[in-house]
Image 1 (tube, rainbow, N blue to C red):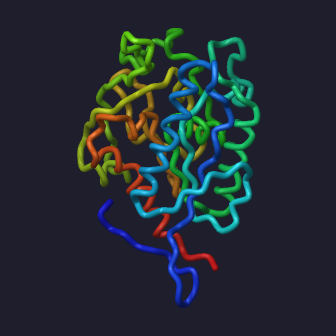
Image 2 (image 1 turned 30 degrees about the vertical axis):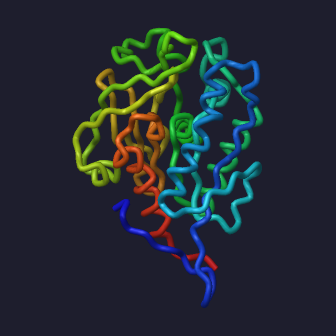
Amino acid sequence: MAGRRARLPDNGDVTRLPRIAMPARLSDAEGADARVGLANAIFDDVAALVRAEELDVVVVRDADLAGFDGVVLPGGGDIDPARYGGDTAASVYDVNPAQDDLDLAVVAAAVTAGLPILGVCRGLQVLNVAFGGTLIEDIAAGEGVAAVRHTPGDDGCGALEWTWHPVTIASPSRLHAEVDADEIAVASGHHQAIRALGEGLRATAVAADGIVEAVEHVELPIIAVQWHPEAEGTPAHLAGAPFAVFADLVRARPVRR
């Protein structure tokens, strides 16, 4: 699937790459939690994987999606627990109301316009909250499910490194059709996860401890993964898999003039 390339017509004589909106990261990593710096740094890595599918990435700071063909929601800090009726006293980091406002508004606008959406890590959590779901505020606090470590580790030099673990891919699902495997190894770096699925979402990948690792919408062109396909060390075909599925959804969408 990833090998197929196409362009959407803009007019009778000119072709253009599909335009994909990526909400900007609004937190300054200077002096902040190391995870903020990591999220900001890998923003460009996610964008590179989108561009590898011959899609044009445009960073947006508002929810005006006129002229766009899809949305990619990248990683970042924690969503304010108040947004989903969670424990506001729980251990969270980089809660940014402006980021929550932007990401959730972009999701709402994309759904209204019928645009395909891909979520990565925080992006999955944003989608779940947007559809009325809830989150585990802190896996490490003890949910009776955290047999697999999902949080990023320390490499001994103060830098964060990914946690690697297997996930089981549900079949049938768009993701399974792309990776053609029942189980793959992924790179995680999160301390939150889905508690209750949002309306219309189905789990399409889970870790051994039951943490939901990927979702798809049962009707809308929406997919998301909790892991980081852009992490260094991910085999190329697995790194590109969620983006290839997303690109197919974008190209399957009727051309809007």
